[in-house]
Length: 450
Image (cartoon, rainbow, N blue to C red; front, side):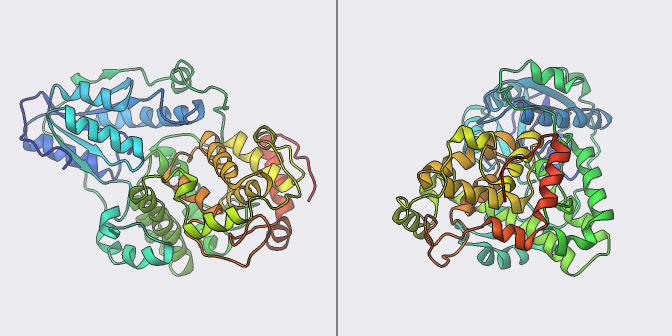
């Protein structure tokens, strides 16, 4: 309960949708529907499209608006009003709350998302209930502190897993709220995106379309054709063996509960299922634990002390190669594998997780200071990736610099932070096939050597 106030007079119950842009398995939406029925009122869903969302681009906004456009007919079928306005999300929510008897919202984990909700709680003068719907195990249920690594969080997650893995029942509304719908026209996501005052320097054409139906299609394809081999082949970047759900999870277009239950329904057990749960639940929720309990999650200063210390001790080590931020952004390095990863990220908004790790490690190796390397990696990650600006982004980039890891044998530049090398890629992966794959999907020839 963010604002524990009595229910007031109002025309409707407001579900301020922000982190969960979907109608399926959305705990916050169904809680709002339950409250609306209890108060004998219609339900209205409101969303604020933020032109000033930190580090967002036209790529991110187009994907988001495609998701909103898919939500609209579902809400209409359920007789739920839907209002989408361009504006700061907290201000849009405050405006819509003036006619609401009570407000329900989904949970956000990042600093600005939490501030929005706190601002509305303080200013709306309405009861405001925050409902967790993008985690399997809510962060405070799993742990009350910042966890050191996956191994410390894993048993705490599994302790609650079975009770949390339940479908969310759909609540039928007693009243029709569709006459309260309004706001911007969602029928042309590309057109709406092009008119926003945002960063249009990132191409909106990617391999992904936003929305809950697209998310479910991708999940079904993964479970039907890739899931059985997931444990053994997920780490090979030259073949598409991962689920590709990370952009949809970031925008709340699919619930992790939906994905885990669907995986269980396949009957595929053992390593494939266990590995999927490890990646989707344990590792993902470790990142949310990190941003929830670490106020400076987007800062080099938040890295473990041992990592900062060893990187500082090796900050003046000679680098075999150094590159500027603009050279890196253009994929203008000597390393063809890295250039391919940067091209995939730049053109498609996606990057295989193993290549993300290699990509981040090389930025550390090639820039003049570890602090500059950290800032550069986070900037590229957040600007180009559809799943950027996410708790996984901050934890994933941090991992390249020692977060959620241990000390390794000491080396130049890296100190005791884990290294990844091009020779290791050649030994363990079909990396030349990956470069060919990137050239094929991007249409860009990849320069550089092995």
